[in-house]
Image 1 (cartoon, helix red, strand yellow):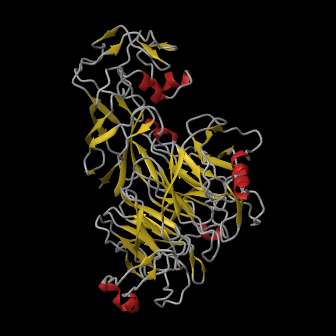
Image 2 (cartoon, one colour; image 1 turned 60 degrees about the horizontal axis):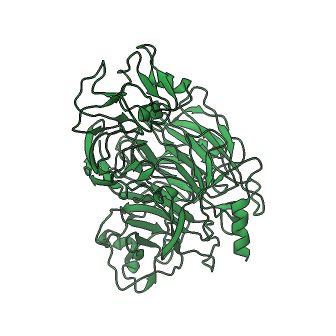
Image 3 (tube, one colour; image 1 turned 90 degrees about the vertical axis):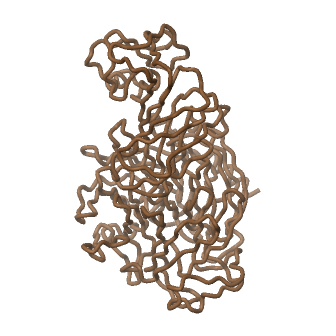
Length: 632
């Protein structure tokens, strides 16, 4: 009964004056994690690695496991594990089973990032420790993970790999394919520095970063996002900056965000919203939730979000109110580029036994909608996800949810059950597209070909995106990123263009050769990609408009009166171009060939072997996102 009341409270406790449409989705519980899910990352398209800390768990390491010879000098006594308890596991998304993963040092509250070569580095951990095989010290450790398909891969560790201890740090992949690690706590206190992994010969071992001293005591797990200009957006406490990490220089400090502080232990979620060439990859950061700095278990969590466009002149925070308060919430980018806020609590703050009143209800956030209509409440879970819980997108478009270990010792409330949340877009009546072929590796500023089975659905609102899912812990999604790709749909047919948009509810007639798509869209209250979507004859640069042409300003439901050419085009190939969406009025085809343009540089999307290509048609993602390597 108490659980039911809490669930009802979480579902209906909406802020005054804020509405959230009640949506759908579905929860399914399948499998267990074996160890508490404090940190996770998608290792391969069907494997998730789970990392806890040094503590007991229900998963055992069976038999005798011989590890890398390079660790003999450090861990002679741990080379033989006979039915010992695991501190990590690998979860199989196909079978919902786990195997034990061997970890040698204490990973308690650490960080992670992919390198361009396909290796994940897992950095830091508990700042203290005995250093013995029973509770090995982990604060300076770098753990290297190379994905495998045979179920035999484990971490290779360098227990003295970093220059200082880092407990509660943040890591991020760099444009050159290396990683940078910010902050944390060292054995002697706060660690206001950053370092590179691996370090180039001309680089210092440590770089001082006073910003993380000035924001004490709410500076842990700083929010870090790489901007398309090559600098970092970094947020700690209520302050945020644009930071030149190459020259160790703050470029600008932004106004402080309203509301409570937004970092651990007053944990908020943050996300870089999807990047697109439609607006020249202008970045926008969304930060939601937080907690009262008095750090009382009974105080309500923060119920506000802030958005900022850090490359805008005089950038400032635009605030909005969430339907319900939340601390320790996860902001996860979905397959279609929208965002879900999931997990967390409605009172208290992060830490052991510091929060209560679970927020069971995922909130769907549509960034393009006007303020007041961006939130949609989806189906509620029945499992509380408190401190040390996680959520991550997986290749089939679902959200994988696990964890919750709210006490310093394992207890009856330690949660091992895995849930899959199926967003409403996967419950649509529209068939899912399927990616039939795609290259395994691409470069920058290139065009590559994919083939997609549209399952007899016209390519309406087609979106192709390159997504980096990243490393997840403590509501911090390190290096999470979504880049919308430009594309052209090939067809053997001659272009058929609407002479007049007679079946649109709203139209615009081109008045001058100087008319611009962006201006037409803005003046008529629509988005530029919608204008392109509803008028497939418009080319990628909007250079082929002609005076007297009638454009759809609303979705066309039939097209009549076609011609096979325009005054500015005699192409015999159907080409539909869009940075985010497109439409076609041709007969639906099972298989289409699409030419896709890669990101222009490594600032827009850093190199990695662990990106995923998502195709979304008519709001429905393909059943199989494809792992793809982007290299310099």
